[in-house]
Image (cartoon, helix red, strand yellow):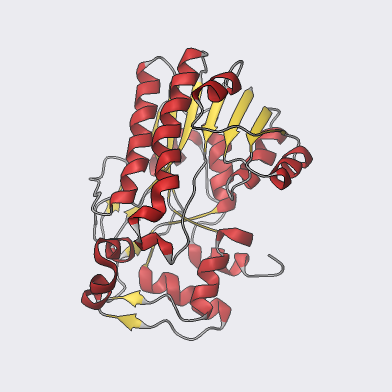
Length: 304
């Protein structure tokens, strides 16, 4: 099929695009840099540069396309994440750009729209497993644009297309994916907040890439994409520190962190034990890295 992939040189795109090309698909990848265009050519894709907020450009780019895969994001740095204004570019890509892409896809008869979303907006579930019907909590306002993107995909479905929404868990992997986080753990800048018993669901970038490939034939719907074994946050950070032979992470009271971060503290303490069962059962997809405990060891073994 002819595929238009936005965010093509992001951490997931760099895994997914070679898989799509190897499966025989004709992929056009959107990149914001000339270096990204060179990588796309090397991967067997056709590079293109368009402004995703330009309605005419997007309309022209989606002509004769069978599948749109929208993975363009602009995630701020760890330090900037607590500032709502730092998410403006990401909000525009998830809300405005998704709406423009859906309009163009419907106008041009695109059959399938695959949208990146997140699991972070699930309400605290304690030790309970969270499936796609679990309640959502938008206390941290920048998460709302991911839900807005999902609403646009719903509109694509109502227009007659097949919409597949992939709610990705916390990504990790080699290279740029985890470099900032790993460096922060080395410097003992990432604490365990409270008792650290809240669950964290993770996803290796290689498994994110294979999930995109599986989504090419998945039935219409919304799916959690995560590993099999969510771990408590203290285990998550302690495991990485152990693999790095770094100092043991600090333990900070939740109240003190809330004073510093406000509503953003929810990103650190919310318990999200997410299940991937629906996607596994529907598509046969299986993560190569079922647990971040083993995944971190692979990420940090050998060259990045």
